[in-house]
Image 1 (cartoon, rainbow, N blue to C red):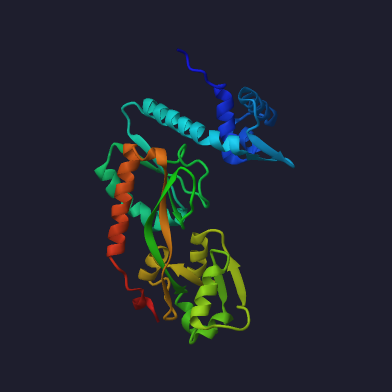
Image 2 (image 1 turned 180 degrees about the horizontal axis):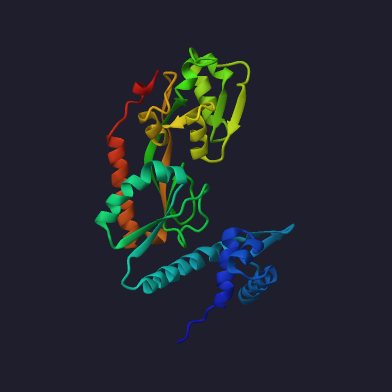
Length: 307
């Protein structure tokens, strides 16, 4: 008996529009016009005899019927994409795409990836760095390693590494103009942020620093740029132990005050539920957890970098 299926092109269009919550972005992704997307969605809604989106002031959002449909369509397209990729690869290595931030890759992951490649030469790891969480996890991206934990549907989230935080700066700031002798001296310097200011707020409270504002707040959306600003002597930063380790070891950064916040944040591993049975994902997840356990086991005493 032949399967009774909705129009397949319309399903693909629906999945893109639902995932992106935008007909315009779906049109850009699929390389078609906005009108073509609207036409495909209307055709699908006519097929089911009910709307799948709520349309409000130029914006779209899934209604209950659309929410019921999306998981089945998304997982089916993921399986098709995975099977297609395997057929296209043939006898060559299987590609595993890992999304990370550039600084996490350069300061921690890359040095360890050689071990994975030696153990699993049949899997070729492609790094896909981005400043924000990928919206194509499960399609173009197999796994992601990101700062913090977020609950997302049909996605597994596993904790990898705790990060301790502390204040760090270039050695030149310690005894230069406005030398750092006591915590209140922090306010005579630029404070560097790679978040919305929360990290500095916590550290200043811990140190009992109150009163006027620092000379200047410097905000960076990229942790690597913020850390480099600190290395160049542009101010002080609330540094994470994992990313600051190399600069501390090399003497490019020092810790001016005895104030450490253990396990303030952490890195997590993300991958789709339907990828659990994929050997490449299973092998990488087991390996990265092993690397994270080794890192945690080699406890570091950051107080030795205090001045």
